[in-house]
Image 1 (cartoon, rainbow, N blue to C red):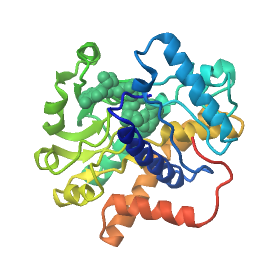
Image 2: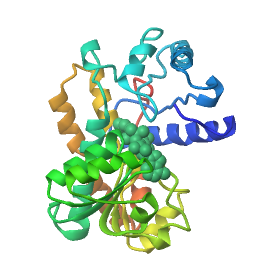
Image 3: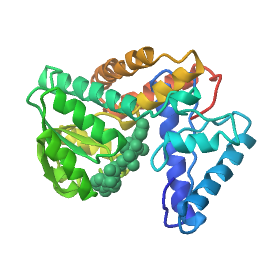
Image 4: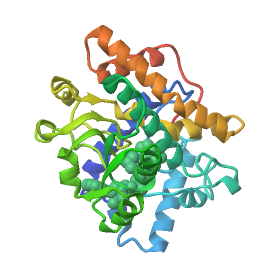
Amino acid sequence: MWAYDDSRAALRDVLRLSRAMTYKAAVADLPLGGGKGVIMTPLLGPLTPERRHAGLLDFADTVEALGGRYITAEDVGTSSRDMSVIVERTRYVAGLPRRRGGSGDPSPFTALGVESAIRACCERVFSTDSLRGRSIGVIGLGHVGSRVARRCARAGSRLLLADVDESKRRLADELGARWTTPERALTATVDVLAPCALGGFLDDQTVPRLGCAIIAGAANNQLADERIADVLAARQILWAPDFVVNAGGLINIAEEFSDYDPAAARRRVRGISDTLRQIFEAAEAMDATPLTAAMELARRRLAAGPVPVAAT
Ligand code: NAD
């Protein structure tokens, strides 16, 4: 659920996001396709609780009409509480609260996956996956970013935190982290940058100004366009493809389709580090970027055959 300037912007976003979901599910080797729904809040008018509720129900009717070819779940702007509204009109919803038989908020699993990805990147660049003493910048301290920051703080990293929302500064104080603006965090000299806000910020203007060795974060669609993966490689910055790094939530949700076991979900999510190792090795062997290697892996899996269930 997001405030887009116009419906073309919403359409562009949903197409980019659904493509990323396809790659995400394929690389994570899940029996899912890829899809995305957006709810454009300006269309709902001033967002009163009643209008929000009506918008969710309207969306739920669309999902139901697809008859199970699309399964919705929470993302930016929605919560597992919203999924409890959507389930009033459709069965095709995942990520319901645990007390309602779902797997609950996917964010802790996404954050675990981001930590696993950061470790795999550190191993590649610094020859150790230890996060002790590593300087890590986290931009965006929402559901995922705040948890990534806590996990890295527990692992002994030195943190630089940023968010457009000044109230998130409290987290920096609590974790003994440095606080800065998102603009400064983007170009700060750090070992790892973990972008956990919105996408599209890596472009021809920002990449030359980056001061990090590694980028691994939850934000979807981080590259303004795919060519930027080459620009990052030319600067010798290791960029872990976002759709690999942030698959933890989807991996957890996919567990709902068998007997949900959070411990099994955590094990699978930690496997993101092995997937990344495989991608980095393939990239080196192909003399290509990690993006090319990850897309190649996804395409091979997609070509291997149809998947039994559609998207979340
Ligand atoms: P969220 O809405 O809970 O948090 C986003 C945070 O980013 C907020 O604190 C917001 O104030 C901040 N923010 C917004 N614009 C910013 C900017 N320009 N600079 C700095 N901070 C900014 O969202 P989330 O669930 O934590 O998701 C974060 C990102 O990860 C999104 O791109 C989302 O699509 C992606 N993602 C999330 C999940 C999940 O499980 N929640 C899974 C996969 C991918």
